[in-house]
Amino acid sequence: MGLHSDEIDYELLGHEQMVEVELDPGETVIAEAGGMTWMESDIAFETRMGDGTESGLFGKLFGAGKRMLTGESLFLTHFTNQGQQKRRVGFSAAYPGTVLPIDLSSIGGTLICQKDAFLCAAQGTKLGIAFNKRLGAGFFGGEGFILEKLEGDGMVFVHAGGALVKKELKGETLRIDTGCLVAITQGIDYDIALAGGLKTMLFGGEGVFLATLSGHGTVWVQSLPFSRMADRVLAAAPSQGGQQQGES
Image (cartoon, rainbow, N blue to C red; front, side, top):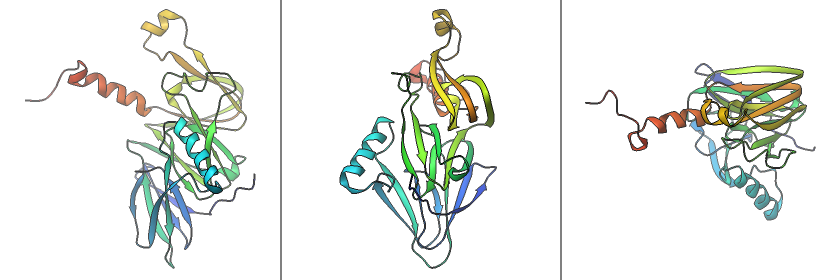
């Protein structure tokens, strides 16, 4: 694959809700815009188009165009230690949950994750899209079932809402709500299927679509996807017909 990532150290803080990355002089970590919580002196940051693995203007534009399809920003923020000593920078997501650290070199160099799960990664990590094999399966999953592909040989950090559950598949099939999928390793086949008949879809209270996962590998599941929490907040908002409670 030819991708080589910076060898960064890290520490999980706040019951695994935050990650603090330690950078040696010259090392860089890339992150989604708005994910940084704090940074020490000598850390310089710059917003750039793409993840830094693309070469030339066309490569950067092509990579940015793929991120547009996921609904993510065209740009990533690069944090570099420009000093002579080790420095630290902290990252956290915008809602409560768990930060999951994964060494890509230990899982074959590739992780596939929910489009809004990526938090940060060592420089040299390539971000792309994992298109589903079946036409339409990657775009009609109820909550935007588009999966990102993270490739490299270093550390990546993804965020799960609520509790995080790890499941090992050894040929079994697992069906989950599309929004509850956090990440999967290579060897897991994925697809989208309707959740029962019309009556179930309209009155069952479950999602219209389910993600069907099978094969051999690891699946990470979250208990509280942001889309589910946002739906409940909007439903309770007065402008959407909800009632104000506990207010004078």
